Amino acid sequence: YASVSDRTLQYRDQKVTIPGVATILNELMDGQRAAPAGASGPMPVQPDNGMDAMRDSTRSLMTRLATRNNPGRNGEASGRVTLSGKISADVRNNALLIRDDEKRRAEYQQLVEHIDVPQNLVNIDAIILDVDRTAMSRLEANWQAQLGNVSAGSTMMMGRSTLFVSDFNPYD
Image (tube, rainbow, N blue to C red):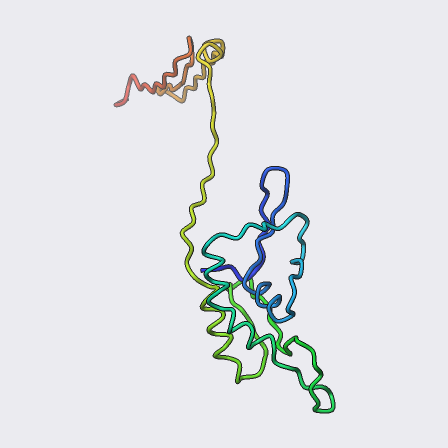
């Protein structure tokens, strides 16, 4: 349901970037809010109730993933709060690619299931065209075409539209 890649939308005079699943998981792994690649405007900061519920239900899982220590080069714990995994987005297939320890697969699966949920969203694109009848009456056009015995045309004389097609000799 969710998009793995970031989406940038134009809203009035600003560009809003909606983070994808890959960005969300990368931010959780790093333990900080990173700006998505290509972000050029403010991020929406007003979470809705659905986001609050998701955040509360996944807090313990995120804590378990984010608080694991990475082994250092000598096998010692490095003390960093980041994970060693790598998360990428495959935009062609809307797939999430995760490279990490196989033991963490179930935890990633649970986290993705909490993020990738259907949303009740409606996208409406509308154009409102306000036509003044007096302005329409001043707009006059008379289009005609003829091919053999068939003539067709459209007229908008006096602010009314008429379409006509005539064939006076259909059986010649």
